[in-house]
Length: 610
Image (cartoon, rainbow, N blue to C red; front, side, top):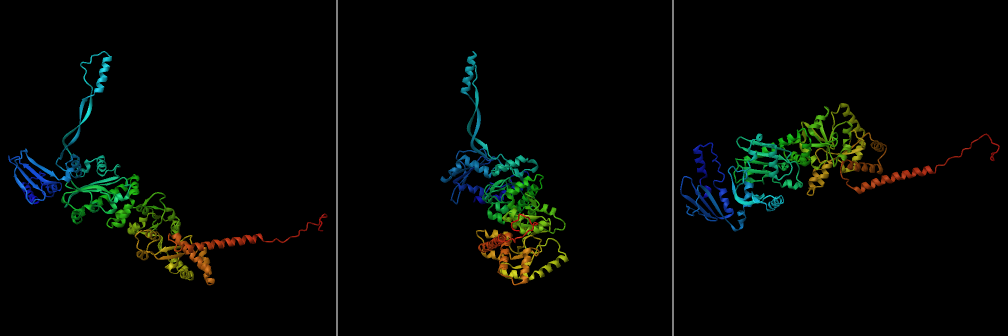
């Protein structure tokens, strides 16, 4: 069969010639799949060939579905000087491939960068000079008005365009990625990016690389200047164009060469070590494709680091606004490059104003006594900076990262550490802001013992709503705050997971953090409850106050209130009690009687009461 028509022997013959300067070792199009593809569109295929050293012209012919073919001397009269001519007799439903425009599009898509010239019999516009009758008549009238002769007047000519058929070279462009980066100008890179990926803005950055060694491949990766208008378009994009020895193979292998979080990256990659009939299955099992993927990721991250290090920070701000969430997703999914991606992260902080700050800049501003990076997750910056969890840190002038996007908390939790500094959620239990001295430990133990009766009664009153009630070590203005255990979800994460359409309720109960109520021992409300608890058995009013404090701390800490109706009733009861007390005070003021006072003015004569 044709598939076994001598590929191995051909290669051996070339090797035997030892012609190192010859480019004939490329077997593309010589045998096999490339030739058989002609039967996808043709019922019959004829191959006519003639050697320059042989006067005899030969013809091979076969029809689709036959198990045989014919080879013989060509007596058709269609004489070739030399070379090979292939004629396809198209099927009825494939006549579109006889259209020169269709063939042109296919050549430009798949064979634009092939090394040998491809010419197509097609139309083109050529210029020619033709007489302009109107301008000639006008010139003639002008000469007649002047009394000059018009016999020797030459006609006025104009440029016209004529459509002619001719052989036209279709692959004039050279593969940019195979050239030396030193030989390619920035305008060429930008032009290639726009033409290849149908973009209208210049890329933010690009990286042209050549990898040599056991496997050789070349490529260019681009960082776009803006995100697509539809984010779904990014997920379904065909951004990586795979070439094998300059032959375009496919742009449907994005997930084989780049992880999901880098789906915005565009580029081309060309390998000599992959087969022409490469498929998704071959790529998944190929060691070459794994090496190519690793290199593409590395080159992309190197490019992003270069953009971030530029003096003009607007470039990275533009990138972050468009693709910042992708980098955060990368921290979650790409464990091998997590440290590198961590250097690219940016967040709002308590000291950055309206700007974003990187973790590296945060660490650079840390005082020597600070041992960790602190953060809080919330719906907005306004909510985060007024949270009771940050009161103590702001008093100590410690910087806090405000995580205001849903993906932020998961991203930071997966990062865990940055430059040996642990990232700590200030809404979790056992927050230690500095090394606790022996005196501070003793003071904490004394406070816990002093308020033991109150904390036990509050735990009994709240029941299973809280894991325990403890005296807080934080310096806050709030009477109490509700923190969560270190291993569970925070209030913000619990809210996000509840909003998931396909959320698992069983996982919700398992992952939900245990709630711990921390009381501020110095707050007047807590002091009043302590006095009530120690002087007598707490009544229903005290229990209602504890319940109201707990529900208020739920709101302040970012949780949802379990029973809004009960909470509303307690608030209305307090309002009613305050209103009643105010009315009683006013009524008492109005009914207050003043005793009469007799004043002796020395006995005036006209005083009738004397």
